[in-house]
Length: 302
Image 1: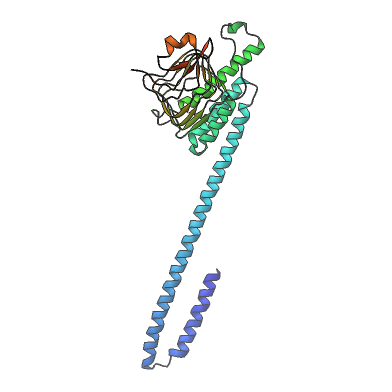
Image 2: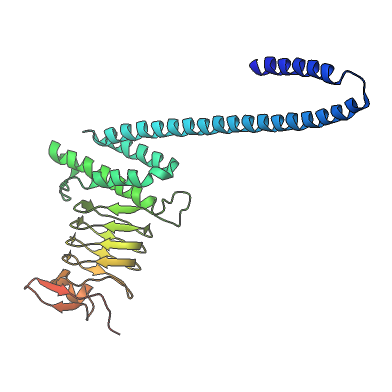
């Protein structure tokens, strides 16, 4: 509105000036009029370009503001869903905890930028203290305490299965790339983490109950198995280690590292009853105790 009024005033003033200065009808007035026309065209063109630039900048600012608002709304929504799922994971009811796990999985699948944070949360849950239930007892005759432990076992095995399912590069539609795991000092029951690709992993101080299977997994960075306890068979066949440390690890049920491995087993221990069956000659450095032998760096002899 103000622009239109201003332009009208300028137009009226310009006409009045031209009538006064160029209204005598002399030949020189024609030349002056051409000069004025040229100057006016330049001024109008410059003004039009400035107006277009201003309009473009305003539109760009509006678009950026809209994008920022959409981003903020998305982040708020993600935060709300994350908080709700985390609350579910802290519930005392197993079905609610399972719902929280699946909600976190959906959230991570749809928001790649938040995948590592969600994996950290799931790993933190698995690091919570846990005593596995007795395997031999019939579930139909469980007391309330053991029933709760079986329910918690179900939740934990679901959590590890969700992680394992999204760490396999042979399933590109579900693969979460560049993920690090921190499962140190956890108690993991019958872990199956096969054909996965993991940036780095810490299992320091972790207790593996039942078979632990890592067959075909690739650790791009450090794989920390210090002070780990393997209660049953540990399967490391065709595992690719970027760097590994097993110092202080205990293999109570033997292990299988395959023919070729870069695992650094120096400082680990194995039960002497399993040496002939599970540990090839050249892997045992010395018998430290009657029931235990210290392992050397994994290297098979021809």
